Amino acid sequence: MVYFYFITAQLTAILSLASGILVIRKNKEEAVNRSWSLLCLFVFIWSFGLGMVFLSQTKTEAFFWSRFSHLGAIIIPVLYLRFTFDLLQVFRKQVLYICYLLTIFLYSISLSSLFIKDMVPRYIFHYYNVPGPCFIIFTLFFLLTNLYSIGLLIKVLLKSKGIFRIQLNYVLIGSLIGLGGGSTTFFLVFNIPIPPFGLLGTAIYTLIYTYAMVKYRLMDISIVIRKTAIYSIVATIITLAYFILIYVTETIFRGFMGYKSIPWTLGVIVLFTLIFQPLKDAVQIFVDKIFFKDSRVLLQEELKRTQEELRRAERLKAVGTLAAGMAHEIKNPLTSIKTFTEHLRQKKDDPEFINKFERIVGSEVDKINKIVRQLLDFAKPAPLKLEICNVNSLLEDILSLLSNDILRYRIELNKEYSEIPNVHADINQLKQAFLNILLNAIEAMKDGGKLTVITEAETNEIKINVIDTGKGISQKDLDHIFDPFYTTKSTGIGLGMSIVYGIIKAHNGNITLESEENKGTVVKIRFPV
Image (cartoon, rainbow, N blue to C red; front, side):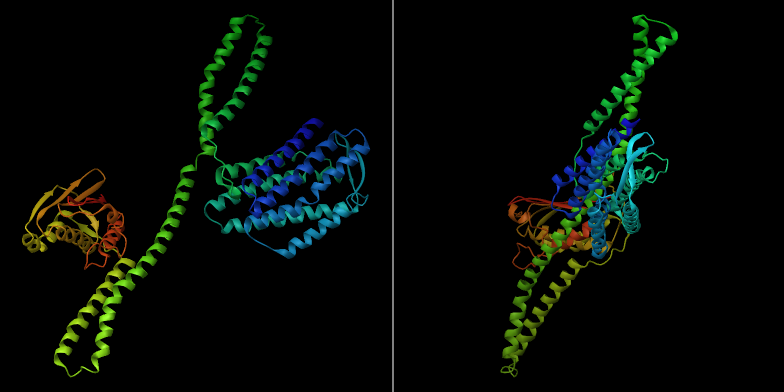
């Protein structure tokens, strides 16, 4: 039985050391990783020394390993507290300083009889600690510090959300098992007849932390473990246990029934083999449930964070583009207005000048107003007012409005409407988007051409294609067609297609352009049904 406690203590030591090395190798820059690795090192010293105490045959040997063990045990409370502070991003220096001072004091008397007075037989062990008066201080220090850390964990856990909350759940469960298990080593010290049965818990808590690292990136540790690897590990363990079970069961059957023939033995093995496949399937389901159940949720959360970062970067890029575009577009009208106002005093009695002033300044003010209005539409579009909308009817109305331009530029109009379901949409905004697209198509064919508008329905979406045979768009320009203030027109300000893009996206739709110079452009719009 002594060997059980020895093996349990050494298992804790090995797992702790392995976890500490893993964490510090993965990311040694983070304070939480360093404090965890340091904690694991001293848990290793404590657990390894304690295991050797269990096997000690002489008092001198027992004293040596007990003092070695307490080199780790004394500092564990303050290291666990520091790890908790680093993990939760909570720093209470006064509490830490007091704990460090008390730790230094306990180290200073750890080799004297004030700490461990004697080593005597207890329970099944040849030697166990007899506490000195200061060991009581250490016991209270251990309990109070760890209770404080646990309380802090619970407090932050109740306020946390998302993956951090999941991580803290595992930290809390692991800590309760580990610290609770480690606490059972105190009972025999004070001659309470309860063995250190909880030592296994200190091994389990390391496994729980490792599981949280693998699955939930605790301490930003990213470990990719393939399903096949986990299946292989679990299947190997199950297979070994399985063959041991077959051997033991077959031996019992042979002793109970008295048979010795090989066919009987093979029959028992075949019977168990038939059971193996369902067991293997059950193991696979179990592994999926434990290790991979939330993988999709975590991937979605990771994707959401990445998309948010990309959107933030795009917004910053757009702000720069908008600032440059506004400066360029508003500068020219303001220059004209400034020039006229400078000459207004001298030429206020000149009727020709006044007429020119009214015409040009009014025109330039309208231009600025148009820029500001389009900018507002781009930067802060009006909220959607959704209602039932028939896209075919909407397109027909817009084409009717543009009929004069279509005739003037000798454009052949081809309408290929299919029966499509109605959509929920803001009719005015959608009309603005389609009007802009169709105007661009017409302006690209001022020397004539063919305009084709196609609508069709599929299972989950409506397709609208606007095809022109105009001058087309170069690949260089096509890559920036939806950028604000990017335009190939001499009179445009480059916000039209940006606004179109925003309107389509606001309706959960998608818009793409395909174009080739001197051959035309295809605008493809998709709306979910």
